[in-house]
Image (cartoon, rainbow, N blue to C red):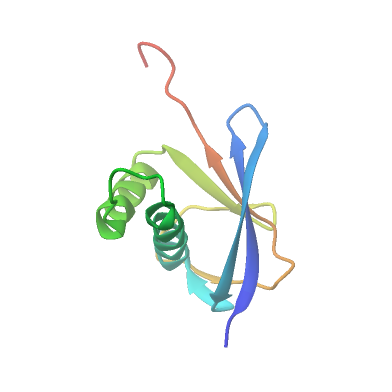
Length: 109
């Protein structure tokens, strides 16, 4: 039996974006598995929308997300602590503050 966690997307400038609720998440999970769970959930919701003309492969999207993390496309804060390793085990509660901070590349950077 898992918990429901809230993930907040934040821009590199600190603007709060979308909030995602993930249900059934293990309270002990690696960052890699949290990212995979989030991508699988978001792709399932995208694919379920009746007006979508294309179907996304969640595994391909998950690979892209893992690659983006590896090249610093985003970082993750859990309870105000940056998680730097994908295979680090997290101890989550329903009250955990999980933030995906998306960075954008500067022109010419």
